[in-house]
Image 1 (cartoon, helix red, strand yellow):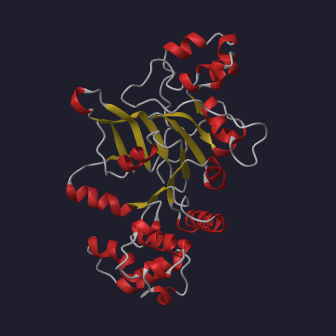
Image 2 (cartoon, one colour; image 1 turned 30 degrees about the vertical axis):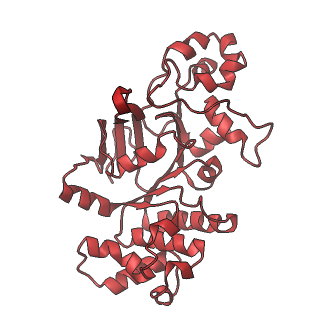
Image 3 (tube, one colour; image 1 turned 180 degrees about the vertical axis):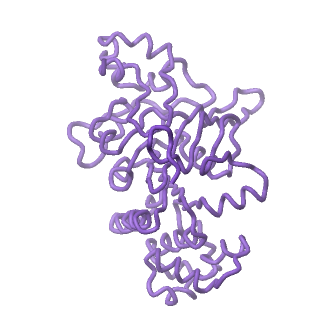
Length: 333
């Protein structure tokens, strides 16, 4: 395993100062969906990318998959910059597989389970025993005995079984990393735990890495080694899941945690909606909704002027706990 200069495992997947901007209509400013992000996923690690809807996390995930080409910065896999030629992308997508949120929308209702799982093998020109590969992937995804499911159609399966088929379709290519976008959001609570346990087992048994995109910090607590909290196109807090979720430093992270069912105290209700990504405010991009600034705590700490006028900077994407917040940094000194 390759190591970085500090002795830790070198990232399997890394983003460095990644920007993704979408052109505005009729001369309007570009929408900066991803606005300078550094993020690493190391071998055998599960990283949760967390934030509200519209914060840019799905755009970032699609960029890391090579589905969107960044307008700035770079993505690298196993130390090599991602190339965007057809052949290079095809090879890359065999090593990095996507697991989508809605299994019903991911599976063609006219395809059997066997054909759904075998599709990736056929796209990539697999030359081995297709039947054995499909059976093995279904078995690893918890569909046992696999042959029992070969000729079934999606409508004949439960929601949890459909999600297992989607996961099997990713596993059949023996990837090194999964990007799971809200992998249990459409499932009943009773099934969510089973799918999360499956992802953990795949990490332990196969050494798979995963980037799990979610709005749910409770899910991050149950599955992730590290968490990255995203707001309006940037990572605002990152670190080991135990540290970030038990001692959150950014007011945004605190607000997200406060609405979990077992959270102590009263929920923190954020006012308004996230700003338009084409009209990102000056200063800290969270300041207009920040309860710390609104409640006067930032003023008492002497950082209110910075909150309104100076951006906290970009986190470097490493493993150490980091926060992009003037108030949190002032409290730590």
